[in-house]
Image 1: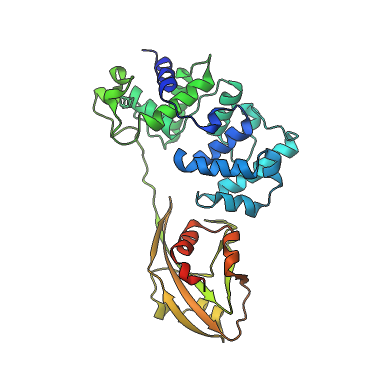
Image 2: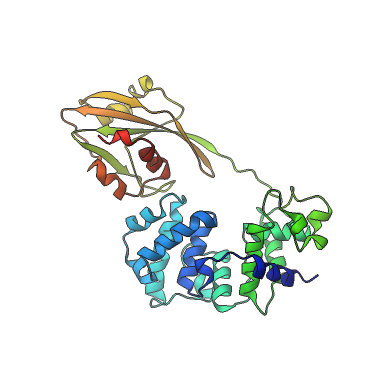
Length: 350
Ligand code: SF4
């Protein structure tokens, strides 16, 4: 059977009508690809539309403040992607005179653009013969051709890239790439694909050998470390306080309530004995109003256990935290763990 012909035939019948499919504008396609690396199409669509609305052109994005970009990105996680997006937009202005590149060799010079995005954009926009390999493509190729190399090993990545290049339809690489990605997203899905309806079934290795659940193969298990965050929601004369996360690590440059991180779960009676607590509240008098129920937030390499503690400060409060009115809270980009807390707990706003 002709793999590409079957896949593109299936694509014509089944593809979703998505805004970035009706354009060859590389800026829009790049935006959609960066967003879709973070989330599924259903959620990604609203982010894409928001970005296009706020930044209709790469110039608009380049000229935006980083905080505005982070705010629009809020909830998608991996904020370094949003920072790279912003940085790359500036690169397009400075290096390419504001004309978004469409060749693989130019695209790959942009910050945050790797082999996957450069292949996708150059093939979709300029029909360059570049094969895309993303999670969906790994799955389709490994199952259909019976490739057992681990997708998270260097040799496995090379083998899959080579195979993707071999099966690429050189006459219509953009269409082929879109088709295989969509096929992986809708038909050859990770769990319980409907193989009985699949046009590739007759030649599919995984189907014939009952290996659907074991392909694609991965070598390493991601290790996650536990972290314990104690957020202080400080009430002081109709104001509260926030700080910006600095340095590398999760949520760089986002804002948060003052944080005390502890090495293990710490009950409030022990937390108030810590040096960090003493430093924050020094000689202030305060009431601990509410200790909210713990929240668990799972990231790829970390599990965060967060406790939100409402503290009312009486009298003077001498601090370097940023003082804001409650209604200003929503203007700052914050990690989703905090925006969810604010949404869940309207009573924190007096
Ligand atoms: S037959 Fe099943 S496993 Fe094979 S390509 Fe189709 S959906 Fe994927």
